[in-house]
Image (cartoon, rainbow, N blue to C red; front, top):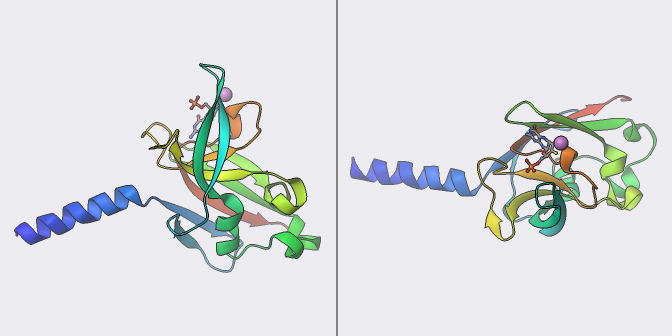
Length: 156
Ligand SMILES: Nc1nc2c(c(=O)[nH]1)N[C@H]1C(S)=C(S)[C@@H](COP(=O)(O)O)O[C@H]1N2
Ligand SMILES: [Mo]
């Protein structure tokens, strides 16, 4: 009895510290990724209340897309460029990005899936995961409570 309680608590804690991102749609197979073990990067986001750029830390989105089997770098050409992603949040908020604009080898974009803000885990209001587009002049595309990326490839 006591052991199962400890197990439940440990599972709950692990679930809390390792948030998952679902990626589905036009890719080899739908995946649910944990960010642990992936490369890390930083990006800043404008806080409109203080008019200050706040540092976030997380995993470069291209590392996640690569792990999910999407074509990037030299493989991202031709019909594959007619691919877009819908970033979806827990509250239903959605933002669309083309795959081309997310590939640093094309656009130089630095987009991260952040799990930390100024060194601390994200609050429930914005986390556990938030999309941060480094250099965006307004935070409107920075999807809070990011849960899912839906991939749509228009030309097969
Ligand atoms: N999930 C979710 N993310 C969202 C929004 C939202 O309504 N839901 N609003 C966007 C808009 S329009 C802005 S300006 C910023 C505001 O971020 P902040 O509340 O952390 O300042 O979040 C963006 N991300
Ligand atoms: Mo906004």
